[in-house]
Every structure is written in C-alpha cells, then in structure tokens.
Length: 150
Image (cartoon, rainbow, N blue to C red):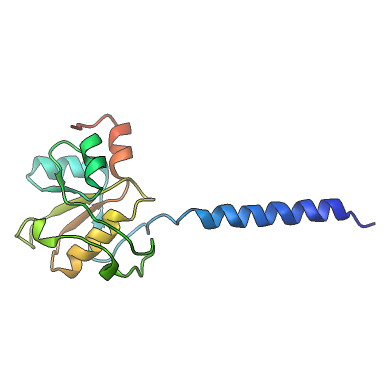
C-alpha cells in the first residue's frame, strides 16, 4: 500500500531540516594547532598571573560587557566561517597585541559559534605568537559562571 501524503510529508521535513542546518554556520573546531583550549578557570588563573586577555569581538559588544581587564582588539571578519578561511578578506591588527610573542596570551569571543577568536588565534600563531590560550567557550560562559565582568 502506498501513502503519498506521508511520503510528501517526510520529504518536506527532510528538506526543511537541510535548509535550517544550512542557515547555521558550524561551530568552531574543538582544537587549534598551535593554541591551547582553556577553561574559564584557566583564564582566571592566567589573568591573575598577568596574562593579557584579548577580546576579539566588535567594539559595541566589548562596550556592552567584557571579561574584567580584557583588552579590545576586534577581529573584523568577512571571510567564511571555516577552518580554511581567507584571512586576506578580514581585518585584524596584530600590532595591537602585546609585543612579547613568547608570552602567554588569551583570546576569546562569543563562544563556540563565534569564529572571531579562532581566526584571531590563527593570525597570532601565523604572526609568531607561541603561547596562545584560546578560550573557546567565550564571554557567554564567563557571564553564566558569574565571573568578573565590566
């Protein structure tokens, strides 16, 4: 026995699922060669030890709230949200990072779905920074844990 209405419904559900999935960019990878993915607690400890924290979000997001003591160095992205992004389409000023490329440096943005910190970390690594601490979970998690913000 054939059930055409059910077949059409199943096709519509499958097609709708594919469209919705295509509308959302994938999360950043769970790791990045040359960087260490760190927890909120590790960021707090690093900051207490004097490690600079770099907020890679746009200036308006930084102004709305950021990790206490973080420095705003926005990553302006136009490239694809992909591991093989074309950095030449983006704007990130490495000269605004601390000059000691051998010292630890924390970068963050708005969590796993935000590519700015991944891309900034990639740019810093390519620029010679050797101790990048990538806070992949970012500002939303920091806030949810009730950690210091300003």
